[in-house]
Image (cartoon, rainbow, N blue to C red; front, top):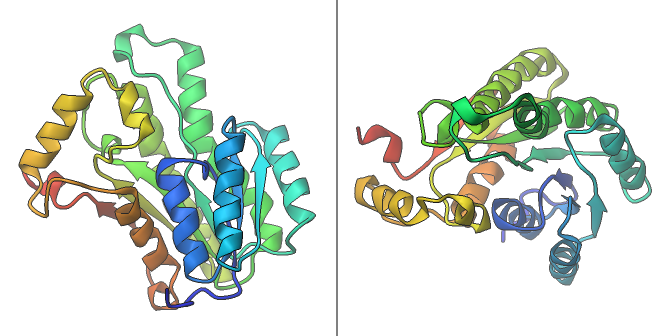
Length: 251
């Protein structure tokens, strides 16, 4: 722990488990108070907050569905009861359907797009009145934004939209001293990967083709988010930082 982010307030969506949890803990260890958003993992979110409080930081768990405008409004009403500003906003919550694109419906499209892409804009709009110059917004994407992956078509499309939206926000908010970037993660063995029917094959392929080693952890991804939140990253804006151990360069 360096305390490099001491005194800052972070809001992390989808913070109860997996990569979101690792991000929330990393930011807390580096000095942040944390608002941990969750949707249906209340016990896990409360356990995370207890762990953050044990570090001497403030923490609150807030339930909301970040792809629904009214729910995001409620999130910020609750947030305002505990904090008067947002220094770091991490749009991490994600969902989707793993099916061939030709079998998808309009409901599936809206589900993916609203939760994975629209949420970034909704969260940003509500956070802006509470965010000063020096603020950081980081969105979590995946390699499926630029690569074809079986059963991942609509999720990949939503991640591509997320990255495009982050670039637009970076351009709009840059003059206000707010930086917007994306972290695109490779294959991380979290609970979400258990829903992939070819999970074992995906992990084996990743291990075989990754120059930096066979395992990518949530902590690796959290470290990249942390780097983008440092003062030294002030001139990094509108960038997609790929964290995959070199998988994407290996053919």
